[in-house]
Image (cartoon, rainbow, N blue to C red; front, side, top):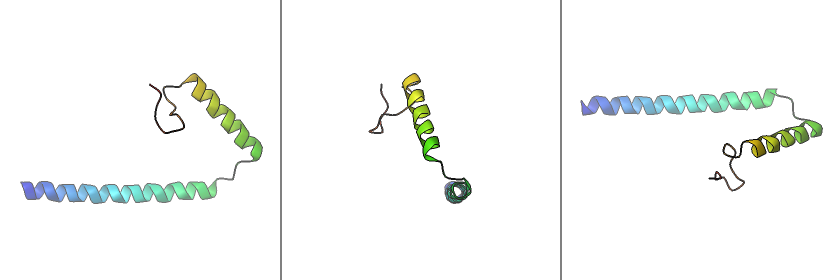
Length: 69
């Protein structure tokens, strides 16, 4: 029974690693295909994110990576 659990754990760990690798590869492909933002779009995005941060402070982490609580 322990051997079976260990085998299953190793299989699951390998599967998780494969999925993470695939997700990283797909994210990189999406980044490469997407056109870069213009300076105007970057400014608009930053304004939007600041607005969302102000309206939902419990969702947005502070600059140091920790949540306000």
